Image (cartoon, rainbow over all chains, first blue to last red; front, side, top):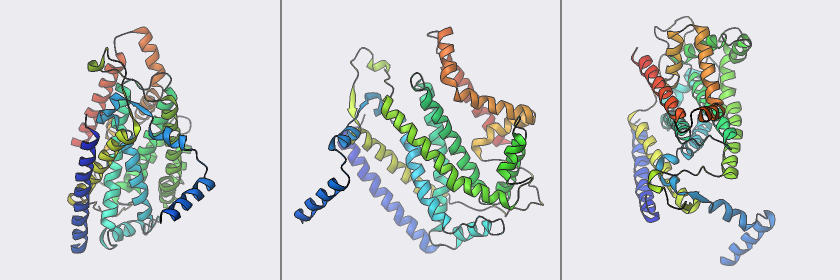
Length: 32
Length: 351
């Protein structure tokens, strides 16, 4: 079972990854 | 700045006098310890995906035209011409698939943990209603694209409905908006998809969550917890953060699916050309295969009987537990049912 701090850290990583994926999506839209 | 904020807080407290105890109660409800396992978050998952569906669905309706002569072309425009249209459409498509998977897995989890037992029978039945709404969302949404497979899938489904005993003809006419699939049918499916079904599922979800809050989460005791006193943890921030982790993971998964598997478009619907192989979406494969193995009448009655059994299972389970105590008959029957569903689904997929 994850601790609260571990969950917060994981959420931070997931947010960064998600924002990066938005950049990829924006790039794909620009070349679409 | 602080003074302005304090003034604003005072105005909100005066205009909406919600007592602080309400927020404390909502946020710090003690949750049974077993909910720390991720598969107990499968209820919040489809709720989160539903919000995504509503948001992307609203954006799609800005450009979708629910008229047979323009529906396909409007979807084509969304996919190839409108900025970010292909992204919104792909998110909507993939989110619907994930929502259906999540609802089905949630039903399995509730079934195999016996969380439908007294006093949660009504909540189980409401959950079955939510399952039906979710599958109907998928069916009506897919039909709105108005490509060959979606048009003929809707035609076949409406024809099958005619074989429902007593009210089959009426039901088929109600779904089609006439004696055959025509202009009215698409409008009807559109209204089902954007108005009636969202209304139904919102009411059912509100009742579902309210009952969970009133009855509490089922207390379960796992092997490793036997002999120990029951443990709890607060909903906020612990369980809430777990739900956020799952929500973010789903968002990431959706982004990956959209980038690598964007929604495409098949040939436009042609009422005069029947495709060689008409198939519904994958979550109806099992019932399609069952219809092909039996006759239309038996197929429809069988599917109806299976759903009725699912709906009233808490009462059937009570009888089974009384007759066969300590034998876990429900678990065995549930396992057989799931294996049957998987076999029928894979069989139809391979044909």
